Amino acid sequence: MTPIVELSDVRKTYVMEAVDVHALRGIDLTLRQGEFTAIMGASGSGKSTLLNVVGCLDQPTGGVYRLDGERVDGFNEERLAECRRMKLGFVFQSFNLLYRATALENVELPMVYQGVRAGERLQRARQALQTVGLGDRLDHLPTQLSGGQQQRVALARALVTRPRLLLADEPTGNLDSKTADEVLDLLVRVHAQGNLTVAMVTHDPDVAACAHRIVILHDGRVVHDQVSPSRGGPAIPHIRSIGVHGVAKERECE
Ligand code: ADP
Ligand code: MG
Image (cartoon, rainbow, N blue to C red; front, side, top):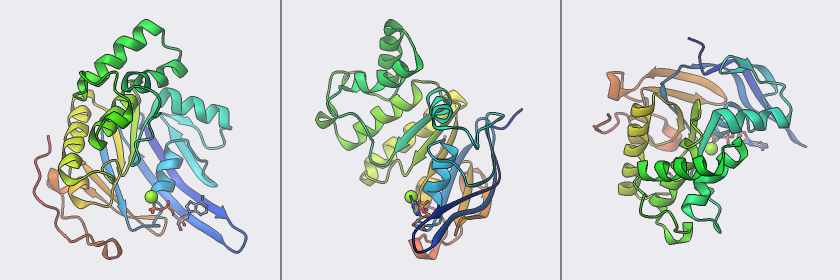
């Protein structure tokens, strides 16, 4: 089967006034249908840059990127936007909800851009909010919801478009540990139910341990690519500069 994501020697250099910043220095990475991958690494190692490139939010400056079999490096802004709209779902640390729109309207919005009819939009948005446990919060504004609930709205919004790939950048980073666990459990559950492909950036080994696969970046390169401890793989290596301490805690995943 065609991989969802295929990166070959992908590079990203930010040209600055004083110095060029080599954020990605030749990434080879394949994500297959149904895989749940955690991307780890110290601050500044290139995790967000990688997610932005994979998420068609930014273009690589070198290498080849195939999304769902289609070569997308070199796409113009319009075609990148089309890829995002039709193939990708995003969850960010800061939720990124529209603050004047209700939970239901937030979840409906990406389907407006996909051209889904109003009746179907409403029905799918309700269903998605029910799936994330917010069936009784449809008309609440984000300010009337807790952080965990806002992130669950964001997850519903990402899933309602039926993306080929869900990208999450520190999805639990703004949440207290109990709420973070609830959001993570939900992510694990929707992944398992939907045969969804997930790539999640995190610096937390407990969070990463829920993935099937752990990819670690250092200085714009992949330095580890291994099966997760939750799947019988080795302990997550120590990443000193972000204070990751060896073995991840035992955690029930799936
Ligand atoms: P991480 O998410 O792992 O903390 P980033 O991908 O955000 O790392 O950053 C990787 C490197 O690229 C860092 O050195 C950062 O300063 C640099 N960088 C990121 N975005 C930009 C940008 N828009 N312009 C210039 N440099 C950037
Ligand atoms: Mg980052």
